[in-house]
Image (tube, rainbow, N blue to C red):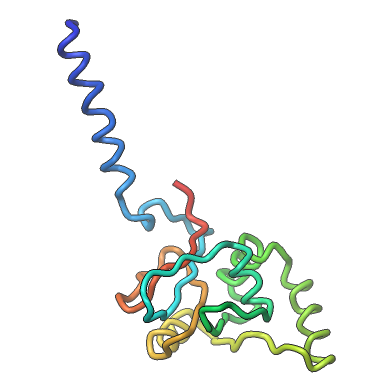
Length: 150
């Protein structure tokens, strides 16, 4: 093998790597990955894991987003709680019971299915929700966070 053919191969390798990085994240998504999407009409938006956790636990962000959720028995919710919030469902339910009792905060509105949740956020600007990473995201929604690792 001569030096010229070796150089050509080495030059192609970075180009191949760049193309593969550009592949959609949904290709890499597994059934235990979650994406957080928002109906946000004021440009690009990316949130950190702690900002999302804070928002879904009753906090407020400067972006004015309102979180909506799935019911406790939903697998996507369990994954979201584990991977993003970092708490079990029972700990989260205990937290919300304390908040409701003290009158300080209310939990996010819940929808029975991902289809209902998706339809609601499509029609309601200013909402944010978590979905399975395998869900096809409509054009008017933006991904603000993902647990998908490439």
